[in-house]
Length: 366
Image (cartoon, rainbow, N blue to C red; front, side, top):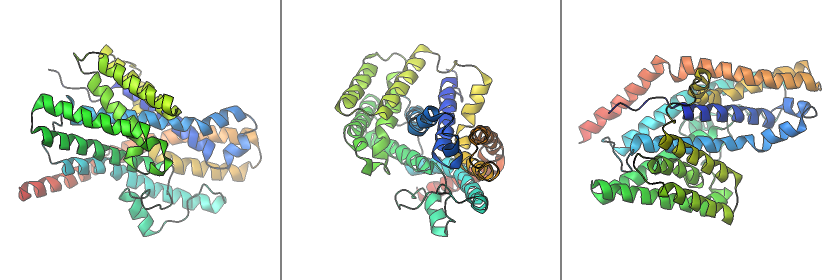
């Protein structure tokens, strides 16, 4: 059997488009440029403000799909390491570049504060606030965010932990019996996803916890298992029917987008083009740097807002051009961040060192 490809072009394309929409949403949401440029294209700015943020649902579904692929490709947990070690490695992968991006955001806010006064500029952080972010407890502790979208990083880890815990518990219950273990695992994920769709996702008070988002994340995992070779199409139809029932009960556009993404991934995998389409290098590139673009775009947009608000206050055309420039510079910064931070060898070595340390501790405790 040939090894699974490390890159999936279809997923890269979804991540590339979604990351760009999130950058554009934050440009419409934060800073004075969008307020000044609004009169030129009010419909476009309103759409970016209200709807582009829903692209985050694509990332939730894709994350669930890829988590199922890596943890339990056949429905049952297949990792040999202790679940806490697996969770630690996921934390490292998310937080090492996240911490570097936080430092950039703090520096960017300090500079922007010298040029303009605006609600979008975070206040100077304290040590406890920074530590709350690095430990991904900023939402739970209700501390002010140091950058845009930082809630997602914490939720991603929570969702991974919830799926991993469910799979580990199912394997323990089934005691290693493959068919039974897969059935129990998928059954637990279905139950949690249904609870999220019909209850938790309908109550905004839960939006700091994984249960609020597990409907979309679970759809991604279930789409992967339902599209395994040889599987009948019935599980996909059931997935669609249950989600449509949740939408009929309480329509949420974000859940509709999540369903469309999950079905697209499942159909792409069953049709064999998940790994082959699209082949455009530029799409693959933007897919690879999507997390880096997400992490660093806020300080870039903040600085461009500060500069333009000083040089061209009240000039819609120049502010609109400033928004375009901030979008382009966010991608340049994201590409540089990916090359020198996210995928840099020193940070990879640091992650390996931390992981090896846990491996040795784990072996010694056995």
